[in-house]
Image (cartoon, rainbow, N blue to C red; front, side):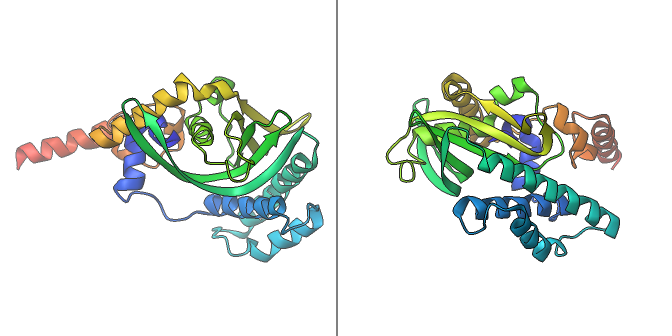
Length: 260
């Protein structure tokens, strides 16, 4: 849903029109880090830097880096990201880890209608007050601004899913959201890894409004281009009507059609 909120046209071209690019080294980086973090959370891997580094070495050469120096640089970045994760994982944050990579399938109200939410949550934790905190591990190079986190659609939907019972089984019946977090594993702050928090009350009007918008976009097939920060790294810029390159291409196609 975050992708639809960010740009409906990009979401459509990636997911529905088959325009998504093949798996990249960056995607592989994220998949490996997530898998090892989940292994630590589940107890399959010890929360030890050396053990995690050994597992990283076993799979790293499978990633499709174009040149060896890029692989070496990203290998160091992955090790650093996992080190930040381990420090964060071992710290006393007043919460108990309940599950990693938790899949959910719930139905939530959308106005007079309903919507089915399916997905996976990187990590679910329970705070001292018995509220469920959702954690989304991020491995990208950029982090959103604080204001953007407060209305981050993906986190908001996770919290709506918690309210709808997504974590009831692992949380001992608790369905009360206690907020959500982006843990930016590539980003270090003085106190440790960069953690961006979304308060629990976002599950009110903001997330519900975003979900209603996403449902309307998909059902109404209104996939408009939305210029924003994501345009800087969007693979569809050459064909986007909101970008100069895209407008030029579309204008040229229109002229060719008229001439024929």
